[in-house]
Image (tube, rainbow, N blue to C red; front, side, top):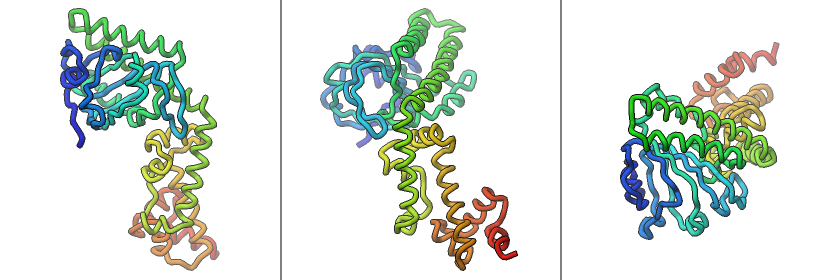
Length: 302
């Protein structure tokens, strides 16, 4: 059963904390939290943004591999995402760090609620957390402490603007840190790319395409045990193309080969590629090649 955690106040209560000083934003000292035994094993659906900076988490799974990591890591959870509470090394070792909790209602000023949605890392899983260098960790803590200072002082007309400005700057740096991480872990990205390409090739050379229809990013992410957003980010770093773009490139390459080298009708070609309707195939083909399938085929006979 999934347990909804709709408010920051409710989160504070469950984790054994005093009520937040502000109902829509809170900075939590992770070392002061507790987790009741009856909550272990629960699945929570979060009703607000959660940005966690944690240390001494022991072994965690990152992409396809498991790492020992005792330095700072950042994880990002968006409203509506689920979090499984399982007993792990982090809880046993009493990890330290900070949790910044922000309800979406707090972000409506200056359209921050829209800008925060552009960051793909809110769709990564906990296992795809951001590993920080000591200097990066120190910088993140400075941002958090500035936010904490504003929350602890008497809130005035400037407080929310200052907090949102710090959050905006922090998220931009988090994006930079993630891109750095993809580059420094280039081998892992290359492994993901090779596995993705192998799966994509197998999709069309086995019965999978007939069983599942058009290939989707979710399908390959599930096969690789990573989130769809993380898969696309890793592939973009390795190839400059997203997972969806690579899928489309493969579809068009196969379509061209079938149109040029077989007597299959346009509808039959569409069916072999997983399309339910030939109109959808023709629309994608024209969007990618500036030609209709019929025009492309005709060009081989003149």
